[in-house]
Image 1 (cartoon, helix red, strand yellow):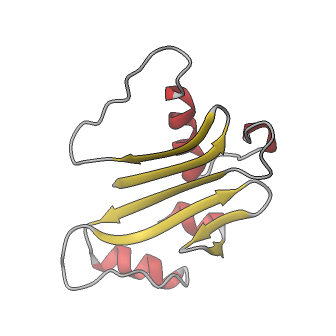
Image 2 (image 1 turned 90 degrees about the vertical axis):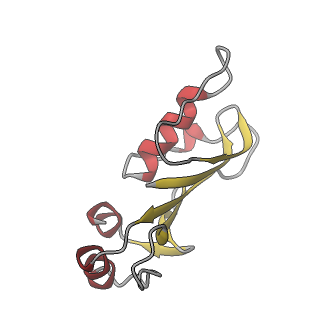
Image 3 (image 1 turned 45 degrees about the vertical axis):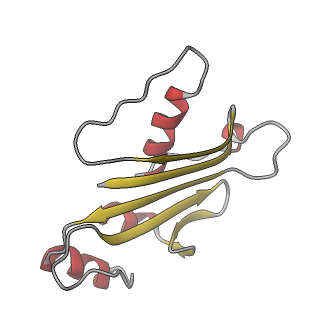
Length: 124
């Protein structure tokens, strides 16, 4: 589950932090306030293309970061280990952090601020 989304210098968004709760989360607002951009950034986090035209005019780089939480299970722990990602999955508690992903245009995907292969990220 996505629990946190941070966006910097993307399209019309300078800085944005969105915390998601359990259940239904809605994005509402007037036309032109960036709802579609927020949805587009979610697509980038799960493997969509991040192109330089998304970066806010005048900014050197854009950043999209998502914090995902999963219910720990042997398959998810095995997938993290196979990908070489040291997640904090353990002791059976819900909400353990499984992946912290960021995307810089031209720099690839990151897990815990370390470069990670997109294939590994998508497999998780």
